[in-house]
Length: 80
Image 1 (cartoon, rainbow, N blue to C red):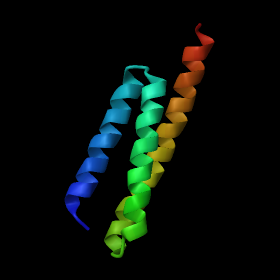
Image 2: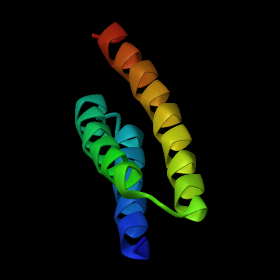
Image 3: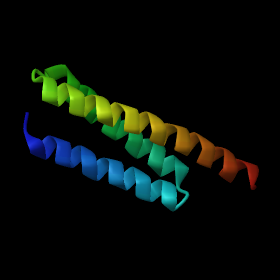
Image 4: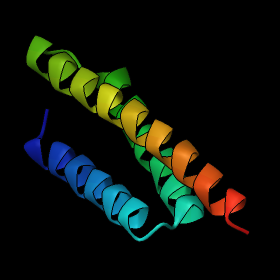
């Protein structure tokens, strides 16, 4: 699988992290959905074990970021 696909995922994950840092839960969630869809597409066509391992790492990371977004959204809503 092309390394540039993983580079795109890495950039997308960094955008999510930046949005979380800026306390922009809505945009972070939107980007998370977009990156998750890209990851699902990569998973559909992955054949090499190394690719599957890399994809699983991103799945775990996206799940952790989703939890951060949920927590952030609770903080933002609670502070209104």
